[in-house]
Image 1 (tube, rainbow, N blue to C red):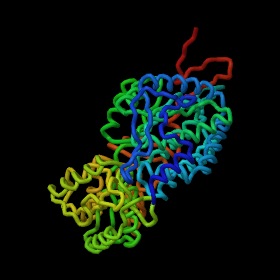
Image 2: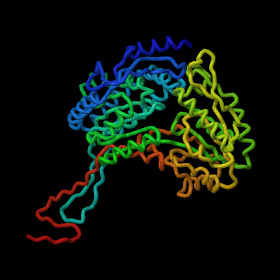
Image 3: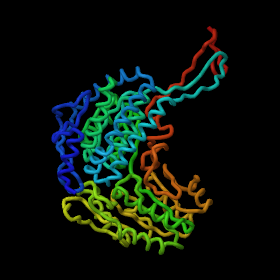
Image 4: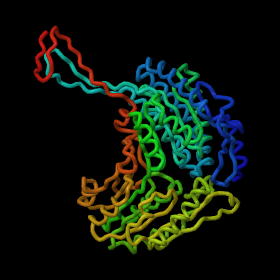
Length: 514
């Protein structure tokens, strides 16, 4: 496949020029004052487009426009807000294939994963539309005669969403579509490694906003995390910052926002483990582990990075897993049959190699893969071999998250031992157990089992649905977004008391006569 033709085709079909403004604030800012960055495809290491990013000057413009839009947006009822999201979801359906191509070209996802990214945006739009008529409060019994007491949820105001490269548009929509129906305005600061995807999405969404005469509640602000991200985190006008990224960067965001008593949603590192019991369905567990470990070239926060296998089936399971790895096709993610595309950049390849070297020094034995890969005709791309490493015990490297397809394998004798190994890492995002034994399943799901925010039985750690609240514990940050009642994070809760009588009785029987 000629990627040069694909680049031109995508830029034309999505109305993207070769030089793109990365700032949208009630219109595209023609000359942003920040640095120029290149959108590079990890498939072949070549440039897709040049993007002009923002600085502090552009940030002030975006904040002002967002605050103005919020003042208008709160005059719309939640169902009216939901109507905008419904229209956006329909527009995304019309552009699903082309947007999927951008995602694939800029991040290296396979074709099906690129389109899946956009489908996830469509799904969360549908979810948000339904939610717009279900923003329920709670009425409570008052102890005082002729009084009524209830809770209501009101919009926060302007919020910021800082997204990562691996899900360059869907995670933004998880936050933004739900925040929008709650009544907030949203500033998007995308990863510098996926700016073109953000621009393409914003061009489609803002077109819907303008054509239907809605307030410009969605703004885009590309730029470095050290400048734009810090400005957003420190600004009391940004009521909530939702950050998806590394634990290291998340700590900085958390501390900065906390100093001004702002709110955060933190989706940080994942070092996800799967327990494979001797009572598991072997073929199902092999498929689940392989998908969890290799999907998106190991660049999901929910990627399976560790498996803990019962010693009774260890040899058989590992032998069959090695066979799967030996047959997996690594290469151009736009080609049929390719399951593992490239890592995002050269730095990711260096981290892959370094982690394998550390694992070896800590007693690890490479069972499959273990080296960078070369793909004919795509020598500038960033490819590696999906890797399986047998570990004798929990070691420092197995407690780290390497954003690459490296799978560490451990052996266990008892389920208690397996759970101890599973919970031994500082991260706590996603987890799974493969078993057909009800007792094992329930113990894994009990308070003495998985310590993660997501727990799965007989399915992979990767691939969460939008209906459930997404997030994790410990170093993963504790944030929840997407489904369930995560919408409450984007609102301020207010307890209301109404006295409809002719006296002022006090709570707790307190008397105050004047």
